[in-house]
Image 1 (tube, helix red, strand yellow):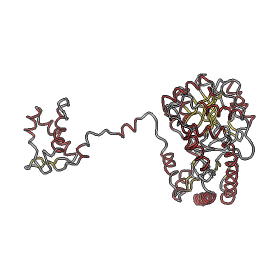
Image 2: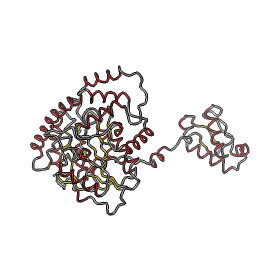
Image 3: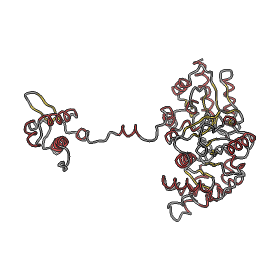
Image 4: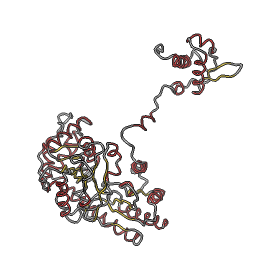
Length: 474
């Protein structure tokens, strides 16, 4: 190692390490005196003393009065200790904030099979169509001539299939107005990067999924919660008087909202479109739960009622088919899609080619609609089981909604019960729940329960445990 370009102080440290690592100064050997080292490097003795003290602190050498300084260790980790970067400093100063500790903990525990999972917002493995997916993936793989990059907006046959699929809901978007993304979360990331200025307000339901994602605050999004009732966002609460027009957006989950499960009525949807048109406020419609209706079909999407190009529409297969497929889509005016497609190419150069081909087969062959019908049947049974078990174990001590679709029951506990403590008590009994506090700023007395993932037996056991823990805290 050439140390001649280093400062004298560092040259001394590197020379000592090199002689020890090469065995020139073995363990137990006495190193040259401070005077001799000072002469060799042409420095004063104080510089030598400082360098030797650093090596002693690292555990390589030890100095004793009357004996001199000896080598006491030649371990590589000690020799390299002063050369390694302090990664903790980089971690703490990165642009994007870490998730809340409790969100990180939930993400970790969702992978632990020892827990009853009433937190997971995904379909149970019992509902996953294993054999059909294997068949579709094999067919997609057999038809591949190459596995290269796709065009920026995504695999054209898939965009055509999505265009036809959306038309069934009254959304008319040509393939050129559709972008294939790696799930709904990537769509939100692209929106935050490409369409929203730092510090601009983003209006959304309160509570909302976005509150649990620090990513959007890190991107400079200034979240502004809007109150809700049983019909959805209370539209009279929307006002841009304090804000500059042309810089804000509104994000909404109108169908089976996460976390509350609320279904926005058709009347409220039309009111929302009218208010946002007057306020010149673009809408990001997150419609990933739409197909999960259990009683009757939901009202038309906002995008289907939109005649002015003010709605950016998001859909996904993650909640209805498979989160691991990582396929979703955005439908919006072409200039917006062009902008987001360019950003996507900058970030990942396109979603998985194999996944896109598999998704195209699901949508174009009728397999997807057949699968969705089975999903609804299974979710109806699960919802019925969850509501009956809640009646049995939590009547009189909690309140909850009866969702018309989706995955979630929004459960309110007495205000005297600390939600974080209830969450901890549940953890101690191997039950995982999502405290409502991760979906909203300020005090919150709610818990989000998912009936989609756990088996029916675990669903009943988990609600029983929850009831017992609430009673203990009362």
